[in-house]
Image 1 (cartoon, rainbow, N blue to C red):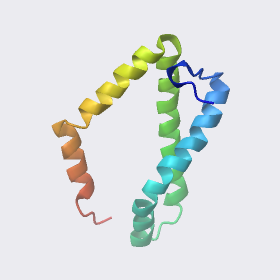
Image 2: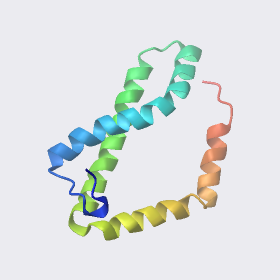
Image 3: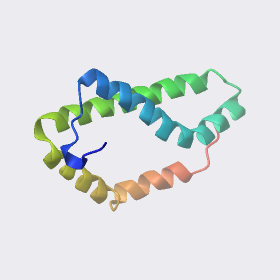
Length: 107
């Protein structure tokens, strides 16, 4: 059962073993349309597994950073990161990134 901010992250190996499948289940389905469009337009089927592996590697690095920051500082860092992420959602940088993502691409 989850105990909110009192939840222990467990050992590093356990955290990574849980984090990577969770990120794969949550993040890869959203990337499937872009990857399939790229593969269809270029016919490079090997790009899909390379993308998936790279995507999971990046999210694994993010998970390691989360683990390293959360472990010694607990809920304070979690709160600061949550507030920072909320502020990022309101920045011109976020709007610019979303605008660029919506531009039609000719792969």
